[in-house]
Amino acid sequence: MTKTELKHKLKFTDGIAIYLGKGITTKPHKHFALEIILSLNKPFEISTGKKVYNNCHFAIIPKNIKHQFLGNKNDHQVFIFIDPFHKLSNLLEKKFELTELIITDFQTLSKDHFPTLQQWIQMEPKYLSETIIKLFGLQSITGNSDNKTDTRIINSFQYIQENLHKNISIKSISNSIFLSESRYAHLFKFSVGIPFRRYILWQRMQKTIQSLSEGNSLTAACYDGGFSDSSHFNNVFQEMFGITPSAVLKS
Image 1 (cartoon, rainbow, N blue to C red):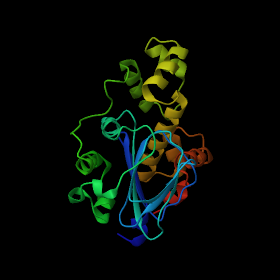
Image 2 (cartoon, rainbow, N blue to C red):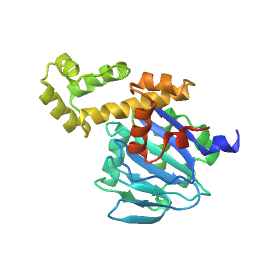
Image 3 (cartoon, rainbow, N blue to C red):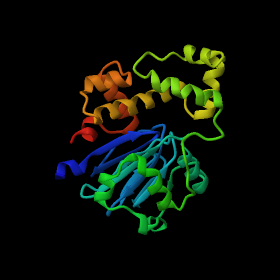
Image 4 (spheres, rainbow, N blue to C red):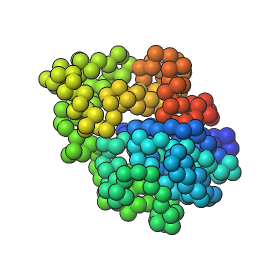
């Protein structure tokens, strides 16, 4: 594997993602996912606009917290994104009582289970849960979702996943589970934490990146994910991650 390939790696699957980058700096942004950031050697900085966190080696950022990241240009950083309704996210929220940006000393993590750079590079997303459980000393988990999410909302997730390449209507989904549009929209935001349209964009982003990772062209990937064109995808990507997709997805 070449040096260039070591710099950028992003994969999404099943409500969890991993991005390995080097010397990353972002613009202020926020996203639907709970985020874990780890440096391999040198400290980084995070600003929320209200507070600046210096000399960090590890951070957990709850969903929808606007922040800016400044990483050391000579070090690799690991970014892990977890859907809030994933059980792993729930375990982390409970352990750290997440209500605002939390910074934890690097020494609190289990060094015995901390992967090397090469292990992070080769790690498939499906093994991330097990790695995070060991790092943070969490209880084992299986599956996604949790008992706090209304079953009617859970049932609508499958429809969304199967129709991302189409124009998804809140009316068609609400009708399928016998709710009014306004009731479904309210219940969805209460259960998931963000409005319906924001969730759709997050799912479209995952599907598009997955398609790109499978070797499809940007045009084909945008179609798979339901973006109208590459410009729409680029704008949403920068809004969510504070960095251009070309900087992240280049090999």
